[in-house]
Length: 392
Ligand SMILES: [Zn+2]
Image (cartoon, rainbow, N blue to C red; front, top):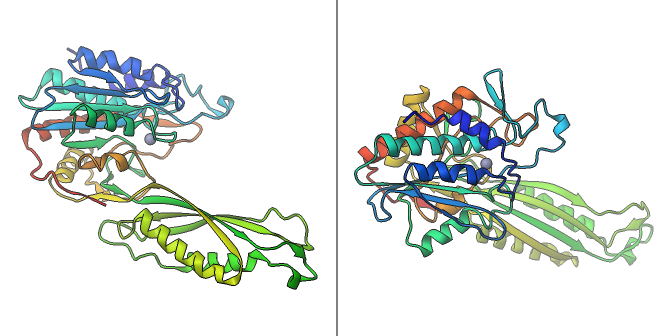
């Protein structure tokens, strides 16, 4: 049986117009390939989103290595802005072009190709290889990986370790593995006072000075200084609006939004409590404050150890670069998987993610498949000695 070509598979996936939450034919393309290699596949469709679970080997095998990724993509914008049709999967100049080329149809193609070749050429005596692919990573993420994990829980399926194939390398292939992520929360603060004439401020109650003083205090506050696994947490003010077109009117209300990216010194709850306290203090000025908080993910870290070492060795062997362990960047579906099993992320150079003219180096797709194959080979030869290592 010839080796599965991950670049050709990436091109075919790009030709599936799977803008969230459209399946676009992407899972329909992968499922028969996996089934032909002996995977049993289940479509887990929930809330209008299509997802795929595939397992090769026994459900109760002692080692169950999982891959996770998504085939949905962000919209391309105006196709006329693109050098090539974003859904044509054009190969030019040693690169493959199109929406999802980088984030992350290439990652999915690389791990599906690695998994298929591994179980057909060197099947492990005792082990299971699991592939989970979602169509809701770029959307609300409520019916994607979460739906797969819910289904797995209900059906007695589990992974002993998992690798997410999102792009992780800033510039050089192999330079970064993500072993955790910062948490993210957004808070909208509305300050309400009493509208009035700017010439008679004593008859009004201006919400702006109290809001500005509060925001200044929040922005100056040192959340923490970081630790061995994380950079310091950050708070960014993203907008301040009064919507007031008149220079002689004191507005009745103003609104500000801030985003906090936090490490494991905090939780969404602890930060919410801090914001509430600060707002209660600010309310002593006579201005009323409303707080609307959305926590989109808690921080987590998979402790460096046997599993991260195994992945790092595979990367070094194939790419010739010793990867750094990092918790930088935004959130990913690893934030859900960390409650299920130890999880790390490794994938391509992510520079053109979500951009016009998204593209990927074809050589890198082949390297990525080789890394994933190497990980599978080492994993089933030499088991990581620890299954613990998740934290909050
Ligand atoms: Zn992605």
